Image 1 (cartoon, rainbow, N blue to C red):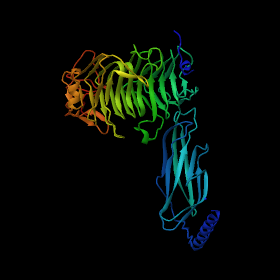
Image 2 (cartoon, rainbow, N blue to C red):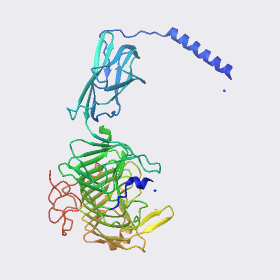
Image 3 (spheres, one colour):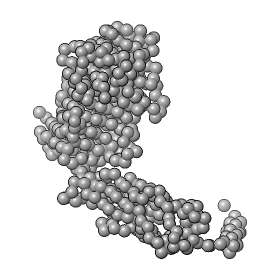
Image 4 (cartoon, helix red, strand yellow):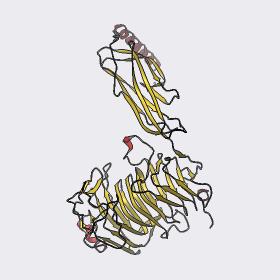
Length: 504
């Protein structure tokens, strides 16, 4: 088979008044200085106050500088105080860096704080790798000497040894900088849970390469980075319910735990049957973008290959959870939530089968006027051309499609394209007029505008309460999953959505 690599693809005012003003300022300052009472607090019993007794950096990646932490130093007395010395101590490897009121360095002398005032110290850390420690510990302190009294604030950080991917190719045609995951075609690269993977730029699974991701692996992407499975490349993610694979941004501070838009996307082109099982994909622009290679020879046709998603959580995506064009997806026990525009956008030709999935759009960071799930048989060929494809063999069974909008399901079909689509025993939030317009696609005990009975929709807990109306409202069908997203056996009759009710 001819290797069509990604490299091949990349290649296709005056002066007098000013002097007078300056002299006036100098005169005023001199007069005021002569009147100032510089009565500093010199009591040996004086103590500084601190916003914290320790500054703790949660785990940071080795060799990569941390985010900045802040320490506030208070003078709670009425008179000004002079700190004779501020310095870093117990830091033999120079891991920490401090900035005191806008000045950087390791030691500062005669730092003044007015009465009932404070100053800010900003701290960063870089942890040096230690071959003998997976999580090297870095201790340190900031020491303060005031009126003969010594105080300190502890600094604590843990490092995390990681495997880094940095760009080696820098295209000039608008594509992102990237590196290739392996060496040459017909190679398989395995990412394990032993060390986290940190990606700068894009990492590319090239043509005829395979990437296998084992259970418990954690993949961290820098701002703007992503994973690109190129044409005829393949990805296989083999997480488990107990040890899912996690794809997320590389900011490890708790503030960023659930912040969208930290990295770009997982971009998968056609050419192989790709599988993602038991994974969490969060905090990016698009969770998964699935489409034939743009401008490739068959990019207008429905891909013959299928992306299989099982027990996958996709959340906090600035644009979409899944964006598909001319592609096939089989999804089972999926939970998609908090999408800035869509949770699922299927465009052009397609074949979609989603069983026991919950699409719950609780996005609250901006105004959203798009449905959570949107299907259309049209797609943009170029700036001036719209293509039309066939939607074939597409089924949504026992799915919740809900959110904080009036219409969380939307369709836009052109008659020139075939539409073979059905929803069996699903719950929708949708206006009656829209629902009635597309009535032929709905069958079974479909529920409209009922409350699903989530534990907490706003907080993103989409498990079912005991009084939920979707318990036992689902259909039983061949090859339906036996276990829910978290491994609880489904009861018969089945629920709607990806969770069976399980009393805590």
